[in-house]
Length: 258
Image (cartoon, rainbow, N blue to C red; front, side, top):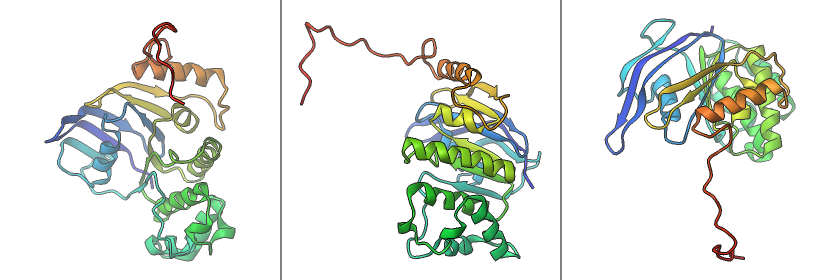
């Protein structure tokens, strides 16, 4: 069963750099898909660590269904982090705690499109396939909350788009409360119910945008293009295009290195 997440006046500092996050207030409804965007260093990944409980040294409250309780939270990272000497199935068996373990694993492998590769070793998988295993592993114990920390950032553009579409399909089939940290605005717009934009450090919410476009979404949809411009402005750009330093004139420019 999915859980609501309430983040109330959360603040996080590190001795070396000072405040990195907050004050942050955010409400995430159960079974919804929310993406978090923001400049590098604004505390996006730190927020995920606080939610999953890897770091408890913070001010403010993080509640699940309105209670200060431990919740079932899973996480998928930028790298699949599969054990190279174990097959796809064996990697999932290692963490699966359900009573009907093999049936659960079979269902997830079907869901992520890898059932025929259940005996393959990680070295026999493409990067996209390995990340599908990572998503299956994050879902194998039916978590209340799933956290995704830029899971597709290391993949090529076409593979990334295919996995974004697969992620939408997975969430529709298993509507777990999902929080995705990404730098990819298009990824956020294609996958999410809401996009939350954080300001530069310390991270604070500057935009919280509902995406009321039916799925599956066309990346060229005018409504998504308009929302992308709004997000770019919120990220500190000018008129939806990034600020750039003017190039030197041809008279003063130095020759480029070969």
